[in-house]
Length: 400
Picture (cartoon, rainbow, N blue to C red):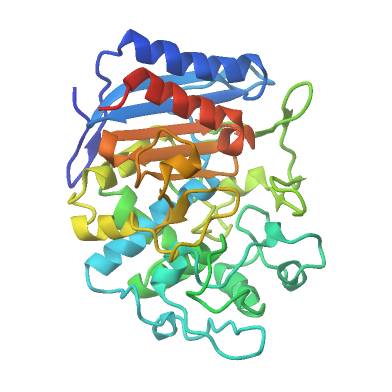
């Protein structure tokens, strides 16, 4: 049966699963579980609108032996970014937001300056493509970094501040470079969330529901998780097995960086500010609905020309750190050179992940959408599992 997306909702139905897909993809997942690199995972693979692989494996909570289920809810971390980016582009499609106009028109209070004190012009395109000159606190070397001193929240901690206050703190720190002249992964999507709120005149959670998750039937995706029994417990890779992520624990994914201060409880706090870049929770099926809507192009969500713009490299040829062959579009990375990246993915493939342990990609040339949400950081985002799963998918399906 086909995976279809209508203006009002989306329906997912699994097709008969070829043995070769079942064997290779399940084997990749099971190998990571057996090696105790992952505690649990949900993996979905769709091709040409057909759900050809659907798997929940391992445990959502190891300590109470709660099994992973297809409808398990995950803290999405940066998987939030394509959702919020899509909301911004819906506003662009409606003619209510201009990609290349100074955001000062809508956010006059947000005026970060360059290191020499000069004012800077920032556009929605630069926020979407992470070329706005902003940074992340978790990239700083220690607690003496500029963002740390300003008390900036990365959107995954229990900061207790409002989105407006976080924007004030972000704006108090000099930009890292002139907007549009370089690429740097950043809090830009959090600023984008504030921009979306201002344009629509409603809280970000409501706007995302009105513009994206509601129309696509993503009923389990929001900035607040109402049922803790459905939410996967978060774990951290460790020896001899992953340990449960503690409230307030800081974990770094990059050498020389202080890392992310995590608050697993944040997703249950209705007062936590809506972090456009990292603050949502949802299911793998919900997120696949979004990816399939974008992959198909010209859907009820966005017109084809804006989807094409999302998938166009916006970096001017800049290389992403530790990702040779990849550029960045409007909300996710874009594969420029499969040879340089040493990947079977097609040129133009979209890809990103999430710090709680997630990875996804869309290969439009092959008609593929793949979602892998796990509860183990950072294996599920940047560990061996990501490459093993990718190779299992392509090895199973072959090129056309």
